[in-house]
Image (spheres, rainbow, N blue to C red):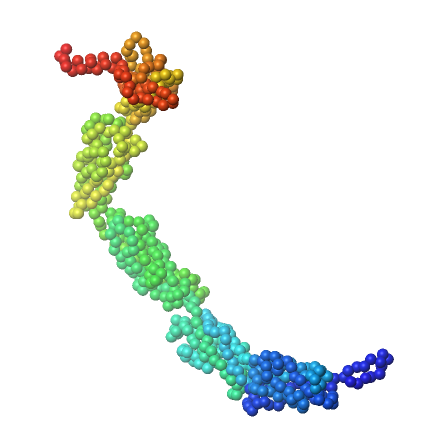
Amino acid sequence: MRYIEGNLGIPRQKRAILATPILIPENQRPPFPRSVGKVISSEGTEGAKFRLSGKGVDQDPKGIFRINEISGDVSVTRALDREAIANYELEVEVTDISGKTIDGPVRLDISVIDQNDNRPMFKEGPYVGHVMEGSPTGTTVMRMTAFDADDSSTDNALLRYNILKQTPTKPSPNMFYIDPEKGDIVTVVSPVLLDRETMETPKYELVIEAKDMGGLDVGLTGTATATILIDDKNDHPPEFTKKEFQATVKEGVTGVIVNLTVGDRDDPATGAWRAVYTIINGNPGQSFEIHTNPQTNEGMLSVVKPLDYEISAFHTLLIKVENEDPLIPDIAYGPSSTATVQITVEDVNEGPVFHPNPMTVTKQENIPIGSVVLTVNATDPDTLQHQTIRYSVYKDPAGWLEINPTNGTIGTTAVLDRESPYVQNNIYTALFLAIDSGNPPATGTGTLHITLEDVNDNVPSLYPTLAKVCDDAKDLRVVVLGASDKDLHPNTDPFKFELSKQSGPEKLWRITKLNNTHAQVVLLQNLKKANYNIPISVTDSGKPPLTNNTELKLQVCSCKKSKMDCSATDALHISMTLILLSLFSLFCKSFPEL
């Protein structure tokens, strides 16, 4: 410890350790340990020792460096790898015999000198580049970049690029060039040679070498493969394989009739190859369509509206083909991109056709059996064959109709009933056949809809037909009756409700109309426990009206404690009017001569 006199008289410490930076080449060979430097202390304290610490000494990775505690010699115990650790920052201090620090710590820097021990590596593969066919000379395709783990500030990591091999070697063994410093791959052949359709394959593989030491012979090398694909452009129009195609189709049939074939030298995986077909003439009725087969690129010509031999036995179509992608500016579609299709239509025996179809007619129900409903008309489309037509019933669900096989007159064989379950929404439907005399014969089907007009042929029905009342009831309104009619208005309501003549000196009940369809039966007095039949007539509003004479069964029951007992009734009470009518009817049948 030295003291310098100053105005304040404060002592100042001066460092006595000299630790100059140490440089060590990586990858040294044994023997180890190997002396690499020395630390000096001007402090002459007896028993003083040097102590070294830091990463590489007493911190991981431990034990790489050590120091002679007396002489200050620094040694390395094994070979170093700069790419693992390039610099070590250690500390040196001087201690007394007890281990107490006398001087320091002082920083000791150890730098590992790079050796060219790492080859260049291509880490970003696979390397694939694309270039359009016909591209001008000097077009950049892609960039190759290698990595060298050595010191980037030295020639150990200074890379230069080179093409070692090109596959295939045609049309030129030197199709591409690589910038030795940047690694950019560019085309070096003329656009004419860069023609995808004339190449053996549109794929080239280049073996690229990267060499360190600035490309000197002593440099280390690494290689990678660059794949370059020559992309197609639409420089070849599609062409039909022949100028005229033939097709034959039967009349009345739809579907594909012929496949048109084309050739195209462009890439099948692109829109420059895929064909688009258009019918440009000969299809005024839109009977034909053409679509592209995505697998074969053929044009599938189809009939979408059945053809008629009697109208035209031949058709001529003019069809053009283009690509999905437009052609390049200096290429145009030529005569080979159009073709003619000659189509022959074959005659087929077609079934007769009903006019009109469906046929409609309106008739009253219940017309007499044998009445004429309609005379149908069917014609044969095969006008050139002069065939005859016969008619027959195909479907007649209710069995009401017949048809004259020669002239097509339809008549009734049973009564037409609008209320039949075979009639839907007042319409009865039947089917008829027209059969020509061809070999084999052809058949046409006609539909007949008969709208049935209603007549008053159904009497009204009454509901309910049974009513119950207590023998001591205070409310003598027995039941509300309703009426319904299967006929249509005006042959239905308003209905007229009436009681038939009541027997006995006293009237027991009366009926009162509530509205057009309902009436109420009311007792005029309490009755004894028994069953009673009340004669009622209900009449509709048809012209002429129809009346239904029926009976309402009334059960007068005993009621106790809210329970109605209708069993064990007294003698059945029946209207004397009905009894007299029954006896009179029986008398008339027994003595018809009276």
